[in-house]
Image (cartoon, rainbow, N blue to C red; front, top):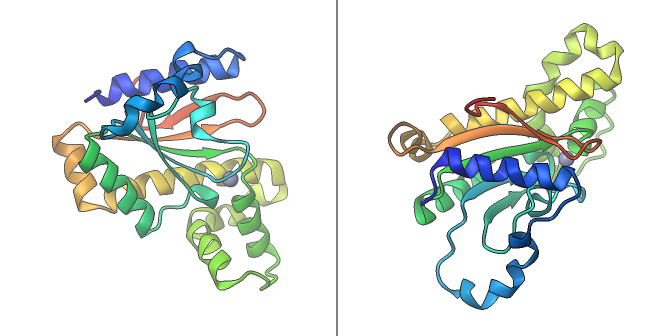
Length: 208
Ligand SMILES: [Zn+2]
């Protein structure tokens, strides 16, 4: 089992390679290890990220087959099935690092802000369930001066959504809370920049 800090360092190094247009040999050659991967998986990190096509976790962290346990959902929201997936991986595989990965210019955040400022009522019940998850973390921002600056508003809303979702993972599950206190589980919030390719581990990362 890889300790959380070491896992975080691996992700940091992988993202630095990705952002500087370098691919590590391990990730590049990981498909050759496929025949050995029939045994139980041992992902060194759990990533809960957005479904956005531009933010695939394995690529932005330069990792290969078998390295990451990834959950992706629009707006990187935390609903019961996401919490359950994190619990599953943490208890079953002993993975000690969880990263909640949001990103700049997130479409789900934009859609939520649009819905709050000019409700269309056009969303299906299913899509509404995503907007409703994002809404509590961003609607307070609309009462501030940020509402006059759409770019700054979206930037802050993305971060607020990441903070709330990260906190939900830390405190919305008795299993995860216990693992944080007793087993060295670390839950970190991070934002991927579409402009630079950098991941900023801004919430809860040691040494950040
Ligand atoms: Zn997104």
